[in-house]
Amino acid sequence: MRIKLHNLIFLGMILGVAIGLGLWWANERAMEAGNPEPALVAYALWWLDLLGPTIFMGALKMIIAPLILASIVAGVTSLPSLKELGSIGWKTLAYYFATTTIAVVIGLVFVLTIRPGKKEASQEIRAGRLAVLDEHRRQYQSETGTPALQPDGSVQVDYLVWLSQKEGEEAAHGADASRFEKLAGAQHRTAGDIFKEDIVQPLLMNPFTSVAANPPNALGIIFFALLLGIACTVVGGRYAGSVIAFFHGLNAVIMQVTHWLMSIAPLAICCIVAKLVAENGPGIFETLGWYCGTVIGGIAVHVCILLAIAATIGGIGPLRLWQGIREAWMIAFTTRSSAATLPVTIANVTEKLKVSPKVANFSLPLGATMNMDGTALYEGVAVIFLIQIFGGLDDVHITMTAMTTFLIFITAVLASVGAAAVPDAGLVTMVLVASAVHLPVYYIPLIFAVDAFLDMFRTSTNVLGDSIGAVVVHRLEKGCLGEAEP
Ligand code: ASP
Image (cartoon, rainbow, N blue to C red):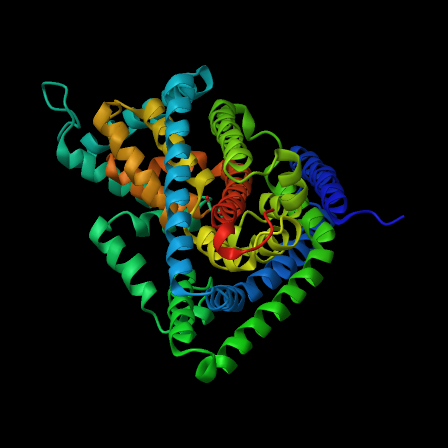
């Protein structure tokens, strides 16, 4: 009897958790006994890293750039005319905008009603931070001879500058230094800088540089591919026929490579999960349990709304949808990258859900790059959670007013559009949201510990949202496409 691929992937996930817990446990026992990491654990981790993140994710990432280029050119050039492209384009963007907005609103409602930052465990974190700040005030006074607080109890501006430098330096040398470096690098940019550097410049980048960049410049590839596809359509088959045939051929060939890669997914996913569990262990959830619960609860409600949209507008029930995209969902959950999952998403959506490649080839690469419902929801929850814990401390003069909530809403939408489709990207773009409400970035590392875990839920929701988007647009367009509905 042949076991189906999605069952094997699921088995791989379970096995990965078991292996990861075993390795984590062996490491903990060794540490308790005062010994270094056992050689066997280090050896196992090396192999897990090689087989999972290095080979499998590396191979998926290897094909993303040519896949986006080929699939969009193939998608655009197979449309009967440019009118259909416009029609598919605006429907896709309208769906992305609507679902991202819904996601952020759900996140805000959840975090403002559950108030995870006000729970006991969070307040213990606040008490710990208060003690650290007391120590900082004393140190500042002994170094500069001036008290940190003014006679009326308000905080000295010079002390705040001193504090932010000190905290920044500490975070930059701590255990999570490399992740913090990314955050710190992002914090001094204005919205204008972000527009110019993250949108305009990448759009117009030389396509060869876009394809060769690591990670590839998806926005630039999409824009170039659209231009190329439109130009091919305008020039017509007589002159551009060979260009069109080339990209259709490339698209088909890369889908074949995707199928080969999917066959090793169960083993690779077992390795990715085992490594993640072995490195983090189950203890991280003790203090941040309410926060994780709020994000996951919000995501669960958003998923229900997406399923309702799929059923009503897309005409496809939850079971059929799940059967169609379960492999992509599981790969997204474990690789934590919408981009790495893209080849499998396209394969699932076109082959199993029978969405027309004319729609899927265009909307899925675009969705993987800019439609991130899970990320948008998480951005708002994370920043408000931190404000709930630390609001009112020396360096966090923020109160949750309607204006603050609105600012968080807008920047969370933007941050999700700007996030790259790679692991931890949401954490980096969160700096935009935090800076908008003047939350110092050195508070963000508090949630590093659970970020990989939450990224699994965000990424799988991002991929689900993109897939349902393709189904919905296909259904709305089916008259024009002249194909069977999914
Ligand atoms: N990892 C997510 C994705 O690839 C982005 C994020 O970090 O939220 O879709």
